[in-house]
Amino acid sequence: MEQNTGVFVAMDTHKETIAVAVAEAGRSGEVRIWGEIPNRADTVRRRVEKLAGKYGRLSVCYEAGPCGYELHRQITDLGHECVVVAPSLIPVRSGDHVKTDRRDALTLARLHRAGELTAVWVPDAAHEAMRDLIRARTAAMEMVRRARQQLQSEVAPVFRTVG
Image (spheres, one colour):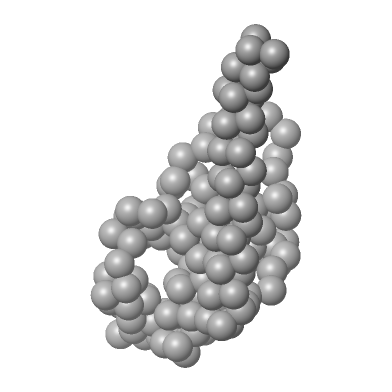
């Protein structure tokens, strides 16, 4: 099978699934959806290896989200380029209000091929763990503050009526 010079792969990630789209190199290269896969490490590895077997070099991108940067680490460990993009930095055409996983993946693939996406800094595992710890501490402190306010608002009227 003939190997091309490379391909641009876009993944629209969610907690359970990943929509995969491929944009072949060149302005006239075909852009198509490669299906939806479960968001599991073994499935992602198989899909990346299958695409690499067909196209050779891969340049992968996906939107940053609540799933973290584990996908980025996995793809770079497999030896391919991976770019994480902030959703707020993705150019959007006016009037383009319909959002589906497939459309988002196709749009990401086109924009990645055109070089229109801005990458964000990807923290290593230690930085990401520290961020998670800080977020958990902040959430716990906020819960304590709310509980304290709630208690004070329930107890205060009782003392006013007695005195």
